[in-house]
Image 1: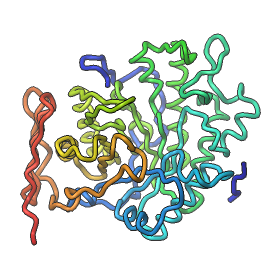
Image 2: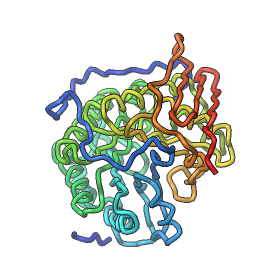
Image 3: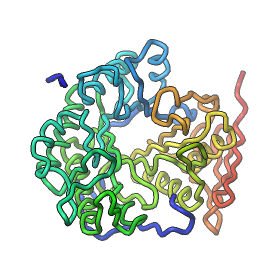
Length: 392
């Protein structure tokens, strides 16, 4: 190949701290974002993002659609039609297309912190030459598997971290990326909580799991140090674990199924009120800290009840630099699974303060200057948005 030069079930324990003591490499208590994407409370559409994959270069209609989003990021298989071109350069080509129609869109460069996808040639062309120098092994010496058939990176190894930093910088130095999106940022913590640190069929054992947790924290800190607070390092977090990577990076996706509920062949997401409340609080807290969040909700495109529910959960948390998306659960990371919903253009306005939370912590109420009001009962999985009247 050629690369151009240039839910946790209800009641499952969720933990906040693993006590591994990773050092925050920023002078303040946590990193913030000094150069921000377009954002406004005027409408929900002014606080949306697009996480997409297209099988080929974007056409004019698709670009007219994407240019409306303040943030656009591309998934791992973007433009797979370009046979022989590495993933990094396919991302750069796609971002050039988006920036050409709207230079103000922030584009994020995709990296998976654990899985050694061979299409990411700036990394794997080196790591595959001598896998033992870069990949994780269990106590028996077998390679750890996060997603078969790929090996799993070990970021406690400085050489592995350096490759990731250089790949992120390769995207930023192209001039069309504003940060990096780090997939599976704390997946090792999920393995610790959900599987007690052991997945024997995939060669995860407890000592290896704890090693990989430490490595994940080290690489996030290294990335944030390298790019600085003028750029975004976004950690995509997992369910089951209270997100703590905000201590290391300036942006989070608390989960990739924000307050979601859907059932379909082969894959489903059963609504968990405990997880939903954690999602909401993660967004609220990040906004207070001056950090960016992406709330990625999923469901069927024709499920208006679920769409309203996830929007309501987002709105009661919505703060400065918090962004939302509701995508098809059948195609959650692809362009065909994305829509510009009518609600994105309804009047909203700044909130009249933070949400009022009931004494038991399950019900949120919030009002906006437009007259829009939102009530969410997280425990009963019900919500109501009364949108302000649209001026004709």
